[in-house]
Image (cartoon, rainbow, N blue to C red; front, top):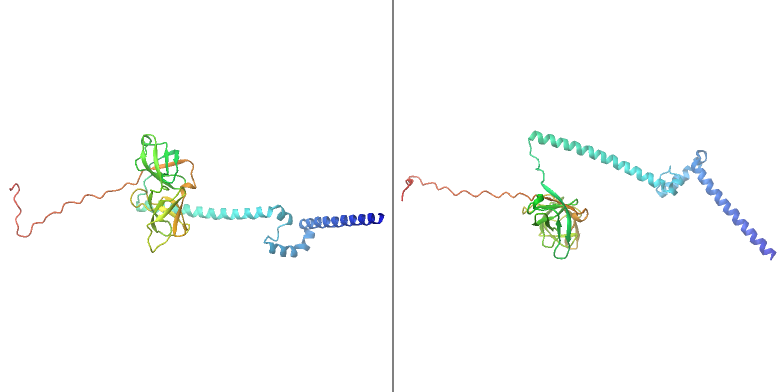
Amino acid sequence: MAGRSGRSSQKSGARRVTLGILIFGALALIVAQTAPQISGFFVPARTTISDRIGAPADTSLWAQLSGQADRERRIKELENEVRDLARYKAAAISMAERMEAYENILNLMGEPPERGVTARVTTVVDGPFAQTVLANAGRLQGVEPGAVALNEGGLVGRVTQLGDRSSRILLISNYQSQLPVLGEVSGVRAIMQGKDRDRGVLKDMPEEADFIEGERILSSGEGGAFPRGLVVGTVTRSGNEWLVRLAMREHSSGYVRMIAPPVIIEPLPEAPPVEVPAEGAQAAPQGAG
């Protein structure tokens, strides 16, 4: 028994010695990372390991373990993005000033300001056959018949029923909705019909043209029901169909802005043709039979 006890005590002592050596080695590595005199011996090995794991060579082991290196890398990326955005902002301001100068030189008339009313959505009716919303503004607040409704995301729908203090808006997601649209990049035109609450399907497309996956879909303005250039959503392909993910669902705060519908200028009536008498013929005297 005494022999077994002695061997177990020796094994326990060996484990303690091994554990102590490991702790001492870890402390030595940490000191080597911080002490300039010692860290010089570890620079080649540390550089090789850093290259393999994709970390900068001057990043300390403690920074890698604590996540400080990732935070510093992310901060540098954000600083680069801020610098790029600052350049874009300066270019946009310069272009806007140049455009204003050109408009002044050409005496160009700009777009007229939109007349509209902002209202809160009070009732939402969602279903397979009817998708409408009720807004708490109507004729007395300046809403016009056929007004176009927008939210932060884009086009919402069109006013179909108008009361003194309320408006019912037929959503573009309604299956009865037929909205002429076009691709922002491709320029392909089609008719969007409501498919479900969040999507529409594109129909009546040209046979020899196609949309670009992920491009924005805008209202084309054809038919005169909606202005041209309103954001409708983004297009994706699903099998043999092109589907539009509606932008109005991505940014909805419960408010809509109802703007005046497009003004459709009707053509002037044609003047009746003027009969020219033939040569040698005498005009009939006024007041004759």
